[in-house]
Length: 401
Image 1: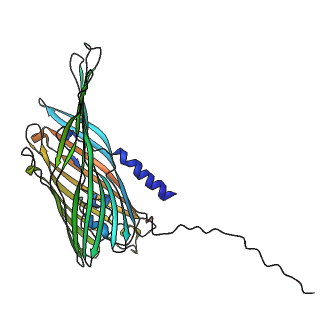
Image 2: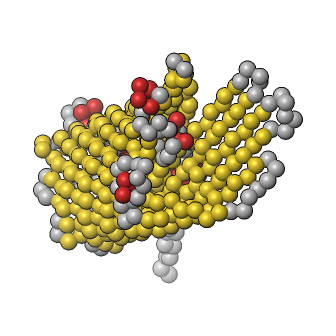
Image 3: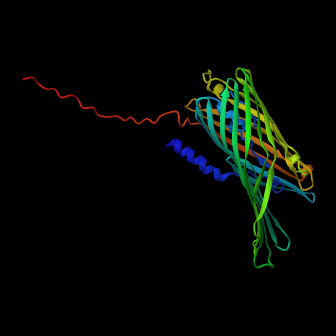
């Protein structure tokens, strides 16, 4: 029953994703790269981390480690502070955020694995309101989500893991504008609603050594097709066919154990947006992290808690309204609490992120996020215990005549 409740909670969470940023009017500022909460606490690295039960499948070959059925999900919750400068005046606003970045399941079948991962690939949500001296109020909102569902197959040959996943993207980009004024009895409202979808493929490989592993994965470019519908208070236009291009995306990853209880990792992600749009630049993300991974039989309990830290730098592919580049930097910390089962654990973490610059972009995000991840729950390897105590009658003693 507990496992069923946890699984139901994870499925319910799929409808609650959100990624807030003041840069949402220009593109998709918030992006997840398919790694789990453990990885996010380690600088969002670990696509080649074979030294643990990994439930993040950015690289589909990662799904083939171990012989356990794995389940993983997470929560990112916290606050984002928006800042802006206009006419030499600085303004700020703090907004709360709640993200459910991924849900994954991986099931072993001999040397093969079948997996599934559903994650929020990219998003951007922001709304603002401006009041004028004549009591006119204008409200604008941008709400955009791009989801990705992966069906994963992976297998291993000696120390080489290979994987392929079918990826299905779907999402929307909705803009609304509303104006209320004392001179208008009916508020003026306009909306532009876009939706699109299409599949593609991702290939991945991980070569493992004694204390090192290297990996590479690549997602093929895809054109998402859909429709756009414009409406206002008085009219609704006919839908128009639209498309949205995703470029070739690939990543390189490295993980190592230089010391028995020390792990390091380095990941690079590259999105070739400049090849599909001259107004954009290539999206690049560099992450580095380190982790202390002790054994459980330490003399003091606090020495047996795994801890990690990391950082990443990312350049966003789109620019602001003045053509200025937008960059982000994040610093992360995490720890794990082992649970009763060998594969089960609770991952906790903190993430501080700064996106944009007031000097360059006249806008910026500063966010502090709390990370919670659940890993484990070997749902299929243990049979249900159907035994129950029973009263066994004693044999009747029969006297001889």
